[in-house]
Each structure stands twice: as structure tokens, then as C-alpha cells.
Length: 115
Image 1: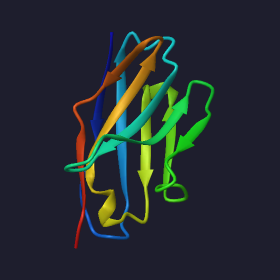
Image 2 (image 1 turned 60 degrees about the vertical axis):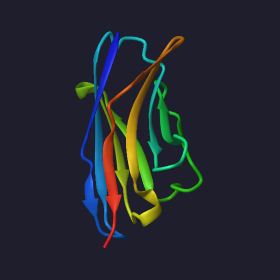
Image 3 (image 1 turned 45 degrees about the horizontal axis):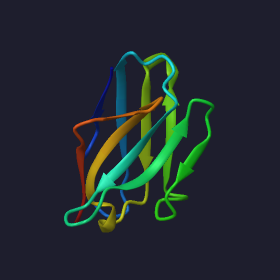
Image 4 (image 1 turned 90 degrees about the vertical axis):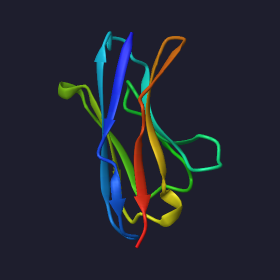
């Protein structure tokens, strides 16, 4: 089993920045990839960014150039640096870990972009 826990959400004005953190624990050996997804009210959950164990990254077109995913292996933590935030970035952000056939999800953290 793998547990992931998000932190760092909050309220920010348009154009502002936030950094989300996702700490992984449990049987974290051989995690294939980790990533961030988000779900806005009335919409389906969508991919934001992922990073593989080899360091390859993938971003949704809507966040390219504004968001950066990174990993700190010593802390088993993945970060999502979000810059130039827009109201349409408002959503619950979920951390995901993939290990073999299994997906593990956190409880989510709310990000609200509003003036």
C-alpha cells in the first residue's frame, strides 16, 4: 500500500502563485510515476502534470509554462509549483501515485483563484 497526502492549497489572487506538496509513504519502492490531477465543480477530473521515476514530465496544455512538477526523493515528496494562476485553475487538486497496476489517490486540496 502507498499513501499520499497533499498540502499547500488555499486562496490566491489571479496572477499569484502557490506550491502544492504531496508526501508519499508506505511501500513507496518501485512507484512508477506520480502526478497531480484536478477537478473543478461540475467537471471531470483532469490531468495537470505527471513525473515518472525516470524524471520525465508531462503537462496539460492549459498549464504549460505556468506550472512545474518536481520531486524531492530524500523526502518522498512531489511538488507542483503554480505560477500566474487564473480563475479557471480553481479546483480540488489531487495527488496520484502509480505503482504497477494500482493508482493511489490523496484526499485532495482546494485551490481557489479569486480576487
